[in-house]
Amino acid sequence: GHPVYRDMPTTIFEKMSARARETGAINLGQGFPEGPGPREILEAAADALLTRSSQYAPMAGLAELRAAVAAHYAHFQGLDLTPSEVIVTSGATEALAASLLALVRPGDEVLVLAPLYDAYLPLIERAGGVARIVRLTPPDWRITRRALEAAITGRTRFLLMNNPVNPTGVVLRGEELALLAELCVAHGLIAICDEVWEQVTFDGIDHQPLIGLPGMRDRTVKIGSAGKIFSVTGWKVGWMCAAPPIATLLARAHQFLTFATPPGLQWAVADGLARPDAWFAAQRDAYQASRDRLARGLEAAGYAVHPGGGTWFLTIDLPASGIAMDDVTFCDRIVGEAGVAAIPISAFYPADPITHLVRLCFSKSDATLDQAVARLAGFR
Ligand code: PMP
Ligand code: GLN
Image (cartoon, rainbow, N blue to C red; front, side):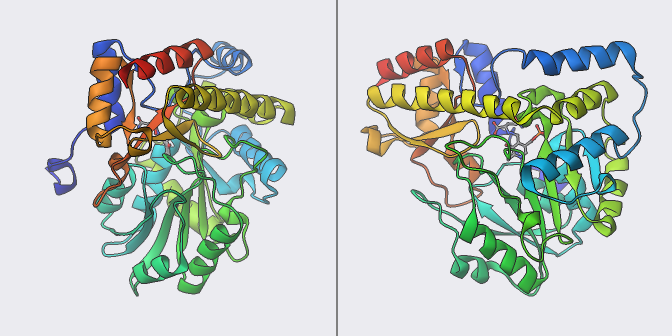
């Protein structure tokens, strides 16, 4: 077998979800909303399945969805993408794989920031690249010029970044984004931006896409996911946006990964992306209320909580909560003893991990969150 896969463990998300299924624990580990999803989005899919073709969609995606993605980004993020610059993929995971396989050449270095989403390193390695990891630390997870410059060498060709950040909930803006853009331009890097959480921001914060910063328009791949925007993670409809010379290469990689994505779901996503501002605001407000409910409940139960400005995740700080266990031990114990599954932050570090923080997913009903809090209160 290929060395990337030989000694690879099963991803932490599947591992913890399997434990939750076996034990009947409340699953606040893997990030997914409770329930079937927003009715109007599901109805659009049902309608498309019943009335439209279920044969192969065009390889780069339905023209209507490509246009809807471009229009959505023009409206919400002030971008000037054309539909031909949008390639539809089967989830952001495929977009990440297609981008890295299409662009990275053997020996190219890819700058990444840890904590990092667990798909990144195996994909970089499989593409023949070498990850250069900048390790960020709590409480502020600050990105500094010094750390970035120390990691960039003459062979660095890419920045692979995530914003808003899974697992910390940090939303990068202003100066930090400007610094990343400045270094990409100065060092001739292509940025691959995993922005799947772009619509999940709170407290009035708006997402700022790196592709919109000076010098970035033609050197950025912007990746999105309908799973997050519409609370339907199982649909696996995503996309990658880039200027034509890059988009052409991305499409070539995509055509031999999945070739195309289910057309009925593409229709529903195209329809959803055109919903009025108030629809998206209502989604954000509901998730913000869930974040606040879980944070308040855990705090009342004696936990030290770090709620973020985006994503479906918050973190709890074990030592600050008076708990003398590392994150892996805590997660192992609460799934069996309290009946709550969670994700240890150390899973997002390939080396030298942060081990005192635990990620909890709050995209659940009030009743589920309250029950999880009661169980975690009893565990302390
Ligand atoms: N990137 C990040 C940062 C994610 O959190 C996720 C899923 N939670 C993905 C990529 C994968 O997205 P998809 O399910 O659309 O493949
Ligand atoms: N991205 C999801 C999370 O962070 C998990 C997706 C997966 O299981 N691969 O929870």
